[in-house]
Image 1 (cartoon, helix red, strand yellow):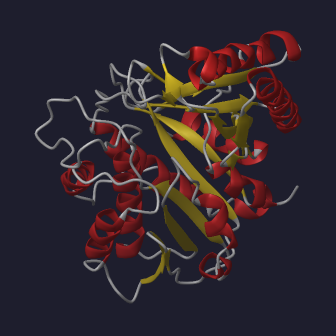
Image 2 (cartoon, one colour):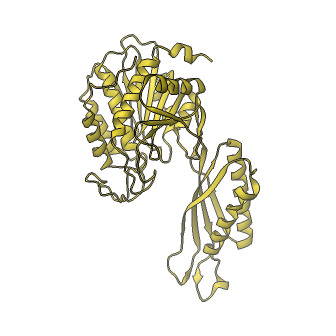
Image 3 (cartoon, one colour):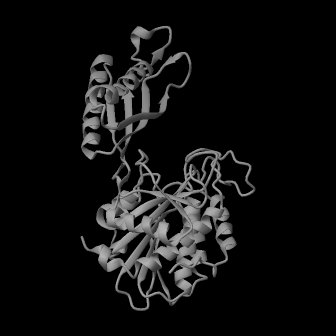
Length: 389
């Protein structure tokens, strides 16, 4: 029932990963990335695939011979605004941009799975989704709503994410909640500039911002039930132009995370209340924007348990039932509409996700391709039972 995929030239997908790694691009600006993927797709049998572009993303349907079901596989293609600090020969050529979350690996794996089914006869349809802007501002939700996507009706959907803390050959996942609900946070404070020698004639937004940041840290410690989980993190602060000028503007950027969507709502209400207090206390104006919200990644229980059981019983790969994490992923929007799951693929990197020295082991590309090709083939025989509630 399980035969390791040997018909593909895995080095080809390692080379593709390295090519993509050199051209990371931010959300909805993945022009070179999109072109690289399209150029590769041109080499595949044209009678087997149907290609649609959506913004900087791509939808590819691999047509089945006798389709009863439609499987979907989603990968993300964007990079992060990080200056790469590796010594790789194929390091990023784009200043202050890096594939520091493994989306180059994700894309190479997706192209490997796609290639296998494009070159082999398979009964069911498989939709491959090359999604832009996962890191922001969020590509999943507008893609789901697009007329291009609405043409397809996937029965189930899958995705993977590399995991630096697991060795190559290990898969980690769990039924139900895997990743948290998340929201961006942007606060801008406006006061009055002045000379440092005349603080009484100005309205210092550095002090106002510092006070607000400290107050924001009290939300989790004093407004959230200690038995529940939540995060309010400030990752970026910008203010001032010179050391002897009182700043008239300060900007704060952060993230909110919780497994409960209601808890996210409560945190936002508390942020608004604290910000109003800053306005009154410092005689300033404040603007709060919660930016992009990501829905939690909630794995379908039946499908996930079936996948884990299949890994245990039919493959030599190790499967770990992991704990949920406060990470965010807009794949959650797909899972809200379509049954499916996400799993973590071990890549054994010393450095974690979003680190400028992240260096996943490329052997994991073959593992990811092998697992998904064989699981889709296996599931096609079982899907009718699993689709029922």
